[in-house]
Amino acid sequence: MSAPSPPESAAGVPTCYRHAGRETWIRCQRCERPICPDCMRDAAVGFHCPSCVSEGAKQTRSGRTAYGGVRSANPALTSIVLIVTNVAVWLAVLATGASSSGLVDLLGLRPNGFCLRSDGFLYDIARTRCDGGGSTYFPGVVDGAVWQLVTSQFLHVQVWHIVANMLALWMLGPQLETALGRTRFLALYLLSGLAGSVAVLWLSSEIQLTLGASGAIYGLFGAIAVITIKVRADLRSIAALLAVNVLITFAVPNISWQGHLGGLLGGAAIAAILVYAPRTRRTQTQILGLVGLAALLVALIVLRTASLA
Image 1 (tube, rainbow, N blue to C red):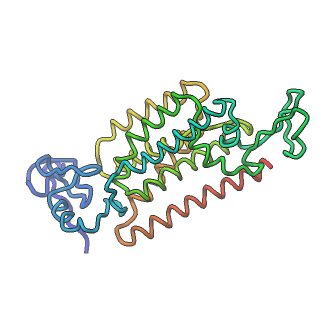
Image 2: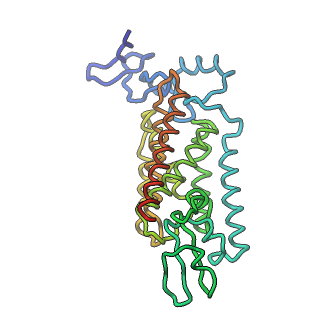
Image 3: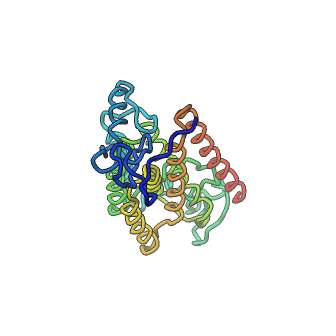
């Protein structure tokens, strides 16, 4: 049985389902019925109508977010843990030599490793043939340093870099965790970062070193944009913020546009899987979608490393 169409004015504009004649383009995030300003109730993202607020109050014991996640008592906790992890790695890098720290070459993402010989030339040879004689080996993903695809997301050197990324995480993280729940938010952050790393693996120079949480942060931007579209909220503010960050990406030298692009697209795809999953069997659909996306990223990693080997 099909649901009744929302009421419309003579001009074809939707009208509030509770107040006939009041034109509106805002819809309830849960039931998607049009609601006027008097009926709008603030939600984690967007607005709910009074009927859905009442229904939600009856179901508070379930403690579920709008998209099926477990509601967090402290929605900033996951962001705090991620920030502390990033800061701890940054302090370790500073304590061991900053930009000359061995942690930078160990944890940073480099598609292909190389050997820097004492003659000043770079050689694509195995580590066993490089060690000794004043030579230095720089590991890459192709050589088996696959951990760099993840660890590079937590690695920073410059103070402005970590401050900018952590500030963005603090601003966006709690909002997304409120909407998605802790587990789904963490999956969004980590998979977005991995998507950024995969883009770097495919689109960057073989020996270029890439580091920073920007891929994951851009994934949060992409997720916010998708959720904003889903709840039919005003997209202008997030669009303006994205435009500023895209401008910085291409205007400031030595910024990895590849990681930003991969993270943004990955975050948008992950958010779409989470928020557009049907209510029936929602969790199963979300899990299958995320596992499928993760499998695609792994397949891209395998293909790229095989082509560079």
